[in-house]
Image 1 (cartoon, rainbow, N blue to C red):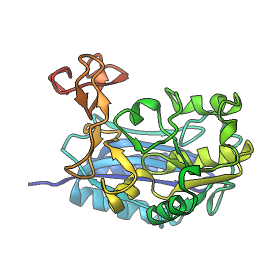
Image 2 (cartoon, rainbow, N blue to C red):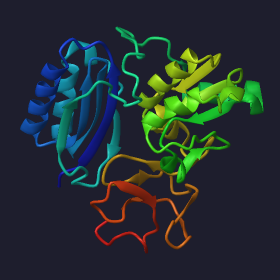
Image 3 (cartoon, helix red, strand yellow):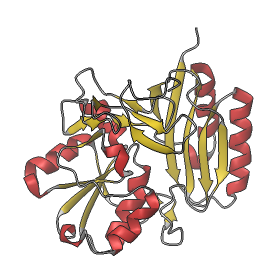
Length: 284
């Protein structure tokens, strides 16, 4: 029986011909029967791809054959089969759409001016040293934080990544400028940009969790500072790091506790909502 696997990775690196990379990635995925979502820009690549284990392994080997992608931090997880409806490979101005492509500066080593990287262990060291002065800053859309977040985190009221820059520029977060701010997101890609944008706007001590929530969860599961479930961008919609994961969400329909997010009002809807198993459409 085939074993479905999903890989998540990104690389910030200057790409002089993003369309050539798009065509290559499309051809590799199609030849292996893989589906998922890949975004390419002059800043690099951001990909989530799924399929049978042998085919995903071949994809990873092919992708790492490109010198700039050789050291990509590939995050593996268990799929459920048919995790993505289609293959989408696109060229866009940014691999994460903050709406400020000209502000993002990328060099051979990645984002220029981003936050200092912290391993999961270093996150705990910082909290042990600085205590309640440390601010965990959620770099995801607000609905994702409804089912899981770091304890005590600041969760900006944003619906899309584009909403972050206007929010920061409004001054509503200025009281955090001189505190240690630890940004976090699913796999780390959003925080690469977000931490740089914060620094550009006068935040003096900015960090990012290296590898995002995924790497933190692999290290500490539900025995650390993370609480709840992790929203993911595939058919699973969310995942837990252990069987003792806390349920933080509340069903928008009936008010029952739940750690699941679903397309709303149906599986074709573009909106997301926190919905319990009883209120989710049967097809989801």
